[in-house]
Amino acid sequence: MTSYSYTSSLNDTSLRASETRARLDALARLLDSAIRVPGTNIRFGADALLNLIPGVGTLTSKGMSAYLIWEARRFGVPMSTLLRMVGNVGVDFAISAIPFVGWVGDVFYRSNLRNMDLLRRHLDTAHPVPNRFQP
Image (cartoon, rainbow, N blue to C red; front, side, top):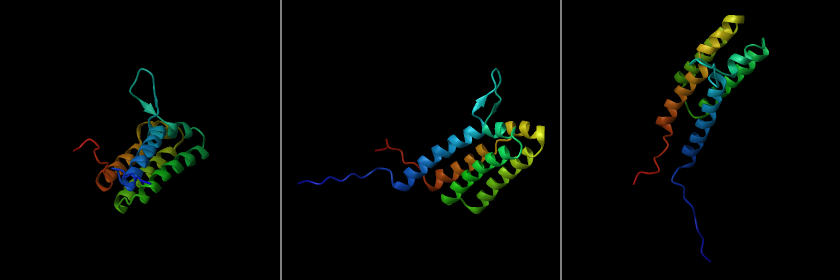
């Protein structure tokens, strides 16, 4: 009887980082830029829509933003970068606390996309995705 083994060209950590990156990128786009206003380049997402529900909506959207930071922490993002990410969400929360201005601010201040950019930079150096087509 012959036994076969399969070895992946991607190690488990890089594969997990790639999957997490795709999932968190989708979350950031959903929160910050999922919907485009027809005839303009203005985009907004669930963060701006949730802000229309006083209190609960803001806390829900910031909870999802906190999840992105939690995942970044799990991937070993340096504390200085995590603090920048928390600062981005803090500024977004402060803007969101103002009734009408907060909704407009959520359209233009995209903390989740900023945080995803910080996370992506870390993952590109710490967990690079190997190019499968290199000899």
